[in-house]
Amino acid sequence: MWKPTLGANFVGRGTRFRVWAPDAESVEAVFEPPEAGSSVLALAKDAEGFFNANAVGVEPGTLYRYRIDGRGLFPDPASRFQPCGVHGPSQVVDTTHYTWTDADWRGIALPGAVLYELHVGTFTPEGTFRAAAQRLPDLKELGITAIELMPVADFAGDRNWGYDGVSLFAPARCYGTPEDLQRLVDEAHAVGLAIFLDVVYNHFGPDGAYHGQFSRDYFSDRHSSPWGAGINFDGPGNSAVRDFVIENALYWVNAYHIDGLRLDATDAIVDDSPRNIVASIADAVHESAAEAGRQAHVVAEDIRNLSRMLQPEHEGGWGLDAVWSDDFHHHVRRAVAGDTTGYYGDFDGAAESIARTAREGWYFQGQYSPHHRKHRGSDPSGIALERFVFYIQNHDQVGNRPFGDRLHHTIPLEAYRAVSTLLLLLAETPLLFMGQEWAAGSPFRYFTDHHADLGRRVTEGRHREFSHLAAFASSEERDRVPGPQDVQTFLDSGLRWEERHREPHTATLRLYRELLKLRRRVCGAAAVEALGQDSLAVRRDGPRNAWLAVVRLRGEGIIHLSGHPIARPGREPWRLLFMTEDPCFAPDGQPPAIQTEPLEIGFATPGAVLLETAL
Image 1: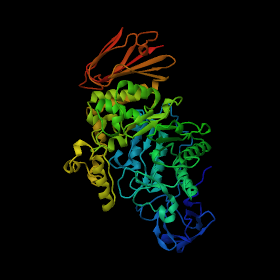
Image 2: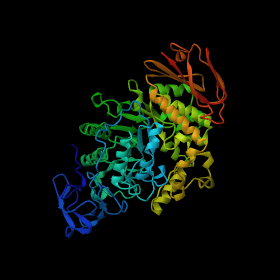
Image 3: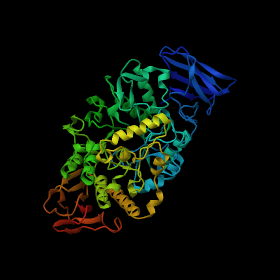
Image 4: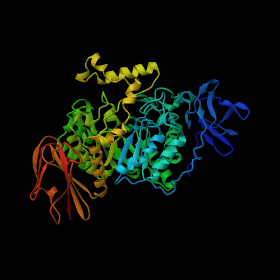
């Protein structure tokens, strides 16, 4: 069974310390306050550059920092908890102390999975692991199977998206304690929900990353990322750095029983090694989870559309379980919201383009991308569709907009109901962004809590990011963008759960529940066809039944389906299940006119019609 090697690990009567500092002559653990009659513990250096010591009597709760060759007091790079913040002392934690109740939990399979992305700090008014646990029954009732937490590794300040994490092994103290996170996962498993975790291995955050004090080899002198120095996965000293990241992944899977990791922006991880670090992480996670009798998934966010990421290693691939596929989102947003700037310029939003993306997993398969100024993508043939994660909203696609407006803030609700139906009836694994299920009124904005100088630079960078948009060409208009450092920007991003009891939120939530209930029944391969420029049909054939969703993305129109192969009925005519414009889902909706023989649907507005037949 897996056991940690790095950091401070309580081993019964004391604590074992181990830290990598290959260029140092001496490393001392300095306790705060003094422990076991001494305030300083000297660590012994081994041949591989690791400093080690066993300290009898040092128990969980002890605070410590490292002194390197007489320099400074630095938190442990593998700290388990930073109760006073990332610049303060590290705390010894016994993660084996928690009594788990999920011995029978084996994880979930991707087919049939429904992911729900949330930010712990804004998911509830309290913004804690404990408060999130209280909402687990709501998500189970909705039809979610796996929660995906945005990064929880500790960061500087009290509020952050999490992608500035520096204490990669330490749950952010503003969300709660390590035990609080363990309890959240345990309680999720008790109600039948998996927990995925977003982890960041493409850079360290800009404030509080003390890794370089222990070794310059943590950082690459050849590669960089959009957010700073690249992590050294292929240069001198890379072996210990690779082991550090792999151990971090295994720590979440084992100490916290995490069911899946979503690797952030793997396209920004540059690794020229014979075996890419992403493949090494995936293999280690799969092997370790299997030893524990569980299933754990590794999912990547990657804009390159590389099929080899999903192919097994014995075929030259990286062995990942799934990837996020932006192409579906971009085509849908272009279709219903009309976005054309930036990367949206590569997408036309045509029904046929959306259908092709849904049939194959992604749209760009080697074509030239004007936005990226290079050819993008590869052939996804042979890859099961559930291994592509589709969404119409996520934290990036909402929060990176100037005002953090969600899709339903921009388009009519009838169009929102239509694209929600499309997302949830496709064969790909759907991901919802918190509050999407009730058309939340709150935005989700970009927020930080950096020190004054860094905060000023982040705010200026945010303004530069939007300067190419015509609406923000002047400094006066850019000043309207909510400041990342303003605490109100964070507060405005919190979900308002009481909305669910008011219209139109109640009706939207009712629709999402019904769609996810139907998704649990639906099985079989998906056939997806464009019906002109503005409509699509999705057909799923199971052993005894077939289901047909006819989705109108834009405007009004009559769709004649009689004789169309995708609308071929079974032993009996198509039977209407429901429409997104039914009064229970749209109190002010305009339901389409339906004729079943011959099958014909007249849409007065965007919307979707769900039909079923016996085979």
